Length: 209
Image 1 (cartoon, rainbow, N blue to C red):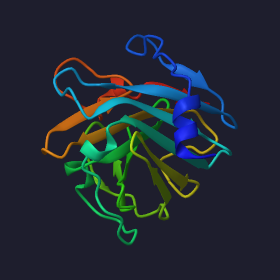
Image 2 (image 1 turned 120 degrees about the vertical axis):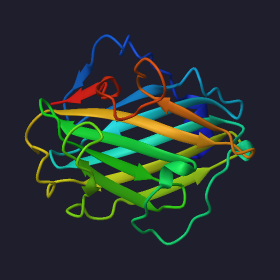
Image 3 (image 1 turned 90 degrees about the vertical axis):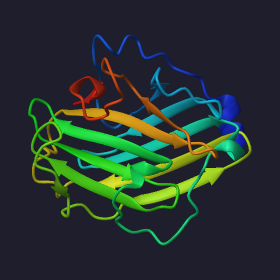
Image 4 (image 1 turned 30 degrees about the vertical axis):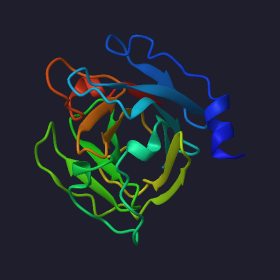
């Protein structure tokens, strides 16, 4: 299927008031949710972002981000050799946050269009950060057209010590979009009050069990 066909055939799904409750999904299926732009960071280049998540087995996660808009007006880092790299969020980047439910520890994953990536482990909210060296490099694939951009990242997570593979996960999905003028917009399943904060517990809006 061509990327243009993907864009034309997708059916947007509502957030179903994710501010007030979390959606629960069981692995071995897939689901797609729209990301919401933060009201303080409106974006003219992008009209819509959807994230599709699939947990094909207990220790795996496949994430796809589909961006719709004027892709030529988005600053997309050029592809380079895939490597673990810090500060990817300073430019266009796609992110995921995963934690065991319940529990304060969580992981952050960054996926760049360049195919560079990062993985961090936190003991609690923005505290005790360190590189998650126990995870292997994700497989990142990208496709682009004038009106659509898609990034897919496949993760093997069965070696991650603080993540119960056989338990429920709480997940947050997000994106930073930088346009060609340098303006950044912040997208997530749900935003807490105030400034954009992907680490906030309200942003972990999905639960997989």
